[in-house]
Length: 406
Ligand SMILES: *Cc1c(COP(=O)(O)O)cnc(C)c1O
Image 1 (cartoon, helix red, strand yellow):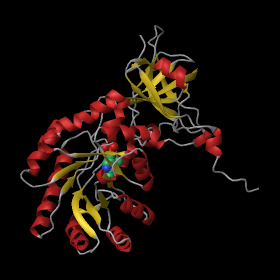
Image 2 (cartoon, rainbow, N blue to C red):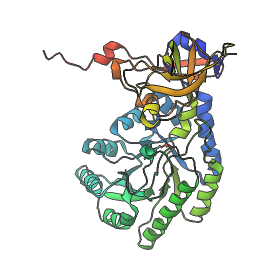
Image 3 (cartoon, helix red, strand yellow):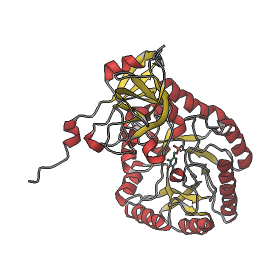
Image 4 (cartoon, rainbow, N blue to C red):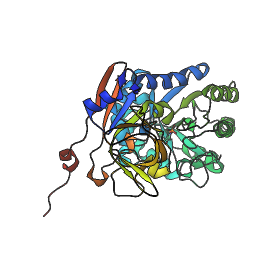
């Protein structure tokens, strides 16, 4: 038995494009996006795909064609959205450290909203908008202080996190923003963390944000939209993940008759399980204590195992009759942290292909050149067609910006 990406055997993808290779299923992207639009149909939300999960221009373009807006966290991501034909008017600018140049770029591009994360940012956006004689549409990212029960590195909505304005300070911050002549308050935002496996923190955050919405309305500060961020988890192994319909029903009930447009910023849950990292076994090294399967992908291609001890399912492309053995799947980088999976049962030998599953989100977008490795190629598979959407990097490209100063 051999494994396929849609209608194409992974072995064909490896032959044509080489390894390591990111392969994305277009059908899986569509299914994930439809999952949101169907579950939330009654609320007709604006779905703003979080570009940082996977910023490939073709992926952005594909989501734009499905009607998606975008959540960006840098000027670079805005440039990507615009280059891919995404709509600035459906683009939300999040992030704790927006530079003056980024704010000016986004104001000129006409983004839908700046999610402001601190008082000094309010001053900065006001000053730039005044200088450009523009009005900046803004909302405040409020930190609802609910525990998302996820990995500490990807929880963002606790008091101890750098993100957002503290819940207790939010009303005062809104009053302050409302006094700024070049800001127009259009919404409120929260994003409490990523890879959330429980629905309750998401619902609790919504509840707490709506209390603020009502306080603001009582003071004459009326909002057009409620942005609940992203964070919905996916199955990497055997996790329970929030059911989107239950999430939508809970949010609809909480919003009730309030006249608020819902905005969502999903990243991982739109692309994570649509992508696989295809890699080739270089060596199998059997030892007294441990066995190692050395592959040609590494932590520079997929950083999540090294960064968060994240689990990715790994399986052989061709099922074999040989006996499986337990091994760590590791890359060639000179770091003990360079592993893709630990203690996995695999039947494979040198030359075989392995799939590292659920690699569509925070995979290619976090890739680096560590150990002077070229970044992997990416393909988008649609039925029987595979389109190269990112060429494998070359050493010339890697070295192009370095100057000879000797
Ligand atoms: C990262 C991020 C998202 C997307 O999070 P996922 O967990 O990938 O859905 C959404 N909004 C903001 C502000 C983010 O930083």
